[in-house]
Length: 187
Image (cartoon, rainbow, N blue to C red; front, side):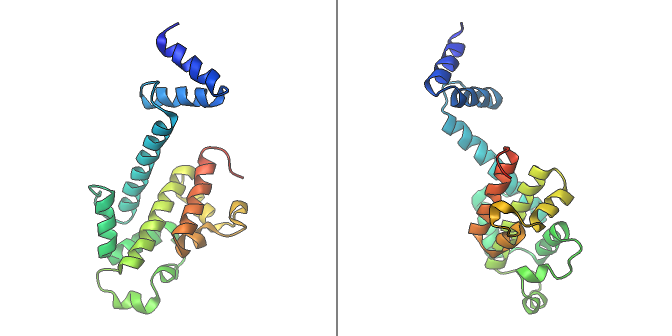
């Protein structure tokens, strides 16, 4: 038996089997050494997924790819172009002509010429991030849209879109449900 096989077997026995098998599978898939911890692999996969969603969110908003997460934060704080709002609304709620006013009040929308406020931009970036994850999980814009607008039992029969627009905590709850759906542990 090769040293790698012995390490996998030892990890499997030491953790009751399941975690060791997951560790081995993730190590092979990620192309990492078998002695890298499960937590490290999970962290790397999470960071890669977060960056993918960040880039997808930037794409939905019509922005060029950010150089880093902090570059994206700076762009959002400076205020996104009004066109970013129009782009995400077109994707998330194409038939709802009033949806954009849930993010930017009507009077403010008509006063804004080119840029939105940092707070309004943060809501748009949050929505774009959740949209990217929902579309990845559901594999189609229509299915993602349906998920966001349908009450969900894991959210106490609340609509995910309402929680995402409310605040970051609500968005994290929705991301959690999407993550559970993606990995097969949600209702």
